[in-house]
Length: 551
Image 1: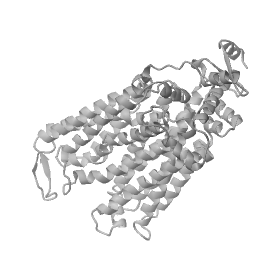
Image 2: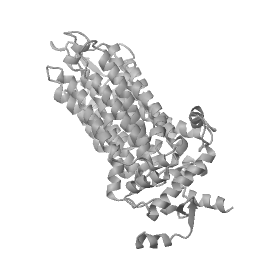
Image 3: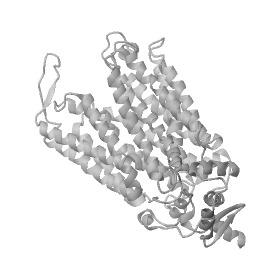
Image 4: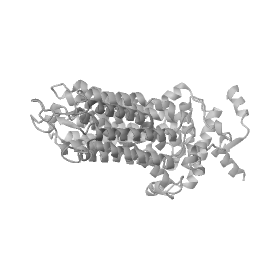
């Protein structure tokens, strides 16, 4: 031990012992200092967000490829039928939902990083199958390939959040996990660029190139993670303290016998022992049932935490952000307010990408609860303004202006009003990208105790994909000209749902800023969501274990 560490150790007023580990009673010293190398290790895992973003973004362009349309339908076809489009798009979400639910069990069996790597391999298998589209059955390869790839994305999307939450230092955990959402936005932008670059091709490269590029994301993530340590909390849960020490040492950039490593590990072990008293080890079915134990009226019950995690992901989808990205551009193009739909979609995507990094600072400066609260307020105002402008003078008011090339052409009666709608949509994207986009992911990785954390995060991620699918299915019925034809009135729906998110955040979302995962458990025991921002830890789990041993 260095002289500096010896001096620091001597400054601790009381030493707490957990087995052979030396802990501390100082709540400010439960985590080891971190080097820049360690920060980069923690941040690398967020690269997995590119899977999510790219896979969600490329398929819309591929479905518009003339070559792809003719491969799936018949030579001369102008578009893929609604039923086939729905199947191709939604089958990925079915796979991701299933993968996210399974991922929690796999992560507890083989570890966090190896589950993500397994997800990458499954994803690669799905991409290989998709490459056979156009050979034999026209629909089979793309559908089966996207189902299998979806399983891989489900593994990755659930366990990357779990892995990052467990390895990141508490003071920057929110910022580093927000990097996952940032990578999702990068993936969306890359997908848009690749599709734009290949859409004019007259061979199968117009759809096979966007599909094949997915190999790169899987290889980079799997190769990088294979060189990184697994979560020390996973090893503690498995009782492998030597491997937990080695993992924590690499993650914090400190030697194995460092006093700092011993203190942080002692706190993790003490918390695991404490949580095991509350949630004893049981059968496979019993461990799943543990996620739903307790009263919905008790803030720290497992049931309440599971509802909080799944509802946060549900409300992230309820904001209407996917409608903005996938359906609003055709709306606006039909008014004559914009001529280049790709350019407009790129504007939305660039705002999304550039706004997300703001959360790296705000989530640690103002906290999770605060940015979710004010973000929901900003989004609901924007949604209602878009709706009101559209219904009164904007998008809903058009006139027929047919041409020989486009007999069904329509133009807006008030183009400046439609431009105002576009401006408020851009502001909405800013609010989403800097608050609810990353905030929901950050929170689900922090609120669950270790015994049920993998399953809790898996269920929460599955909720995201479930609602993603539901909204994708119902939206065409809401806005289709031959169906609901709600036009701008659909923004009243999204505005109303953002209002629910605003109210929900005030009453039910706790503040977890600056707390270790173990301290979050204690905070939720001792306070309510509305007063959680004022809560401060007064003791450590290591100190509690020592007191019980002395008694």
